[in-house]
Image (cartoon, rainbow, N blue to C red; front, side, top):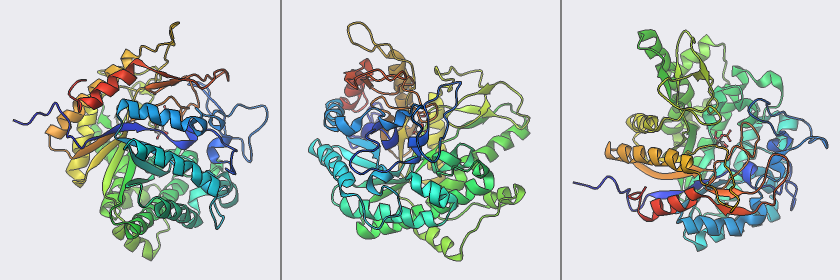
Length: 475
Ligand code: BG6
């Protein structure tokens, strides 16, 4: 019998980050401001604030320096290599390449930075996996054009994508068009995913129109990429929402199904199948959403379907038609607590079994390769006096999720890779804190502004190295 305790030899183990949360260097070498640069720091009980049209001198903007990959890329990539990474997922800062977003020609100095990063990864045989757009667009595109509710964004995005595909056609194989595109089904996606800064756009009409524009942009990018290099693998990326029925009442069962259809399958189906599912039409009609879909869009979507499916998965929750029950926090969703699950320091419910459940669900529906491109535990880490971080809670979290990945592969799921989130500590997207750490590598930087950005290997670093070395057998 096959040894399912060992992951396939070709399995892509690695880690993931996003430019706006990791790079810093926000105004260096010609980079323009992005929407993330006008987001203040926050905390669990203090929401991040937007300060358009520019940062204010009296406010703290953690993304400006983030954890300073811009000046530590060599050191960090060496640490990734030491862990044995096969793949590293990162995003390109759009405003580093096109500072305003609507220029004709790119910023050569910005591209040079990514040339260095990619060459360094290649030096260690680490496969780059690039997210073209991860929660940031040039601020100018938001101020001048209103963000993604405007169809013009498609052309700006394609110009950006084309530069990347052509420049890295011999060096990069794996690409993701948009990070967590389906967060546009929720209010906070208006700013994060679509750069729509007008509070009036925090509504379904603008959000779904913006998502449609991104889906069209994604499909056009997929077709363009395949023409530039037929070997390219283009993927979609969804924040996979796992909402269990709160009770076994048939109304809750149906409600949970509808929750998944809306939050996962609308975007997933368009990306993979190339058309909107039937339930989307009903949802739009019943919610007064009038999508402007051009005749040509249908052809574009049909042609530009993705090669693989990727997800972020952190937690699960419950949903009920009555909405009665204690609320839980989570990655974007505002649902009900599951009495059988424990939660992280930030209240996200930990559910490793749920990972196996969603992997099976996705594979049953689409039958294309899947990669988990974000998973991890945001926790408060203590630096001991002798300069160590004993993060056994993070190891336990990852161990239990990896165990379920093995089960899913045994179930027949074509799971091809795993990149844990924030392999290096970075700024939290939802709260804007440094304190919410995900990394296997500690970065000495704190919410009060102290810290020298020095890097320290956590216990999880050594543990993950062993996992990778043994193809998942020793975990
Ligand atoms: C995902 C995002 O939603 O979750 C990341 O793609 C984000 O950008 C991650 O950092 C974890 O969320 P948070 O809010 O804890 O940083």
